Length: 333
Image 1: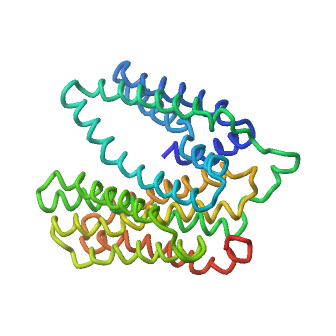
Image 2: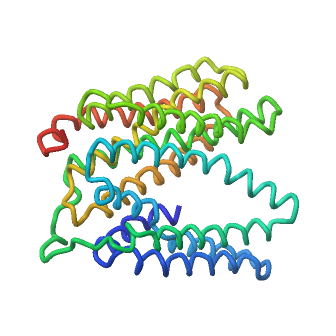
Image 3: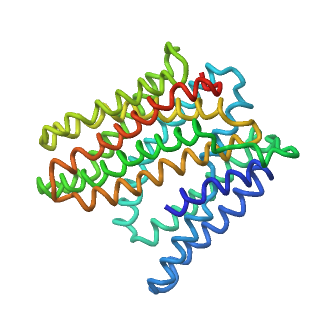
């Protein structure tokens, strides 16, 4: 959560000072905090280290997406890159927990923490030393700090992505509730993995061809599909059917996120692009936290818990539908 909340601040710093001065110190502080978890068993120290690790985590996601316009000036190719980028991230939610579980089981939790530190530093180094990141320069100019980032259309885009986040957070808790209900521990990981697999496949399909309509039209269409994909859960399907069903909204998630970035891109000044992307990422993260909290409180009510992902998606769809004309008027196509 700390990582998500601090994203806009780090995005703004990146827009002003570049990627290396922000992400490199963040990676070092983040790694140091994680290593503190290996020292002693003081719960207060552990909590402080985890919070600081989240706050200092390098904003690689926003930074990477800020590079695409310079690496791929062609809008069509940039759309494909965003789709593949977003879809492939879903694989992290399959491979990451699996790797942690294997390491923790075979060598203990300390090995999992060390692997996290090593992979985090390695990944940050690869990104920051890549030519696009090394050559990227902030476009901050006098007066750009006053350039409004929180216009009504853009704020509505952020709010809609919080709705998508609510659906994601609620799904994770619902998966745990399903595992407990059916006495199948595997479900708590299998359902999110099926959703992530659908997201990856959706990214591949979206990237394969040009789709009709402007980014906001595609965003609305994908949001409608994302919302409709959750509705079968209201029938309270069994574990096997539920695992299959969640791949459907998963396939629309990549399109939703990719089109969200493309739409926001048209609404912000170039010199505030990273910060805008960071706000989108933070909006999803805050929504996930809210969805997790709501689902946790409602976990004992089967129908309500199953309906919560659809409710979050419906909120997002409603906000986007209301914002469409304002976004179009502002140049968001």
